[in-house]
Amino acid sequence: MSHPMRLIPCLWMLLTLGFPAHADSPARQASQFASGSGNILYLALGVGLPLVTDGHDGRNHALRALDGLGTSVLLSEGLKALVREKRPDSDSHDSFPSGHATAAFAVATAESAFHPRQAPLWFLGATLIAASRVRLRRHTVGDVAAGAALGYGVTRLELSAPRGLLLVPLIDPRHGGMVGLQMSHGQ
Image (cartoon, rainbow, N blue to C red; front, side, top):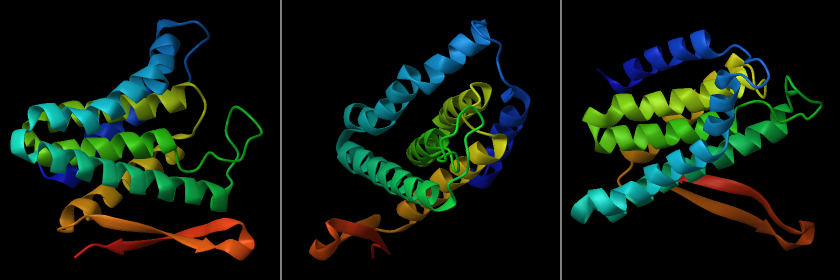
């Protein structure tokens, strides 16, 4: 199955699983785990596991996964600041896109490129993390779908470049430090 086709079952799961869970239900507890410590464990495994399992290529795989993850998350945070969409469960205006979905799909995309036979497991994990955000009413399905697409797309771009993506901070001391980021497609 091609990489874009792998997103279809994931998005279907988001639509079927992405309904709010009732307080203290097993679904809510599972969603809280997936959004919290499960998410941290998933991301750490996605970046760290190649160092242990991928032999000679492990360091490069870990760095490429970290580059895709970092770049995706930075772009997600930038979009949040620009769009300022209200969250479903609060007055905070940082809902679009979902950073959890962005990060999870960035890791899934990198790991599936390095280990195609494991791709369904990585994308299942990413989908469960994204669906948990909808179940907990932190995001809408649109927020997590946009985050998933961002994480996937940026990481595919990162993997297509021989040296990945290069993020360079734009510093302006007159305005208190960093004022932006410049991204280049490393050749």
